[in-house]
Image (cartoon, rainbow, N blue to C red; front, top):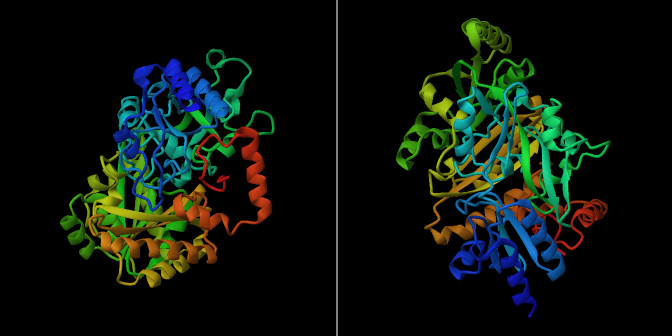
Length: 489
């Protein structure tokens, strides 16, 4: 009776057409490309406004149901963070919340709903001469807000002053069903009243000494449901020049990268190994293999930019400063060659892609990513290369963050999803690499899927208790996405 009553209440809240229990749809939500084993949800719901979401969460608390929010269409899900792990779970699909609420060029900020995707937003901003601080070639249908909440690294570390950037203020509905605004958006006054007074919701800190946006980032939807967020923007450069250095020696490229970031001489900057770079710029497996064969093992890409009437002058002095810097470093093992067209690189750093670029080579991949220090990067790379050997081909992506004070390091284990006999070995390698990296001191700031359980087993009991106390404040009945992180009871 309670199941039927809950179903009827959902229909009364959202309308019959916005609630589905179709088995074919429910089964799609029960699995993704990760190694996590999910269960079939009981409902998929498409609310049309935040009042309905508040009501759904209140119902979930009353009827002891669970809610997993998703923000984009159900394709190419990778990490197991939106899979139901408990019975009586409904999927709250926010993909229809696609409004770009406000673009403020003066303050370089945009306010968007969670269903806004990279494919939708990039051209809208481009018309106004603005650009998002993008992850590396994001997926077309990836939610911009979700990427920021998950702390996906951006490619321009000089514009990242805090680990939370480019996320600013949010409006959130906590697991209790209570609506709240974070940062300067909290008040005084409504958002429209703040706009009238000249405010732009650009400061994420607060209200008072408390900054609740910190508990939303990285929580994988287990603390609250974000209804809108403001995001940092930058002006689009009028001129860009791409540089591609490659070497068999990772240390040399890391040293150059660190100096370029320290003096803020470039915008986009990252390091990829041969297979990862080929997968980024080419689409077909044969093209990827052919390019990877002629690339150096390690590749540093950076872009210098200028704007306005002095753009050429700026590029000239930046290039001169970098030349002087490289002479001081005495990089004998580093070459600069135009093996890839400049427009291909710029496309990957300024546009989205229909399918994940990491899946182009073999059809699927398992990614292991974490934060580390500059000095420890070679140690992590050496470990993974030793563990993998010749069994699996690996793409490696190294991205400086926070002005170069830390580094996102990522290993992508490429595999063919049709070769089921090899999948168990890929899974074993995936878990072994994760376990060994934890022992080596890698900091997994975005623990997803099977690695999350392993990571939290290495946390102190005091830390786990503290996290659960915070969860109990904002979602006391464990309604939101149970099973992720350490919230499994």
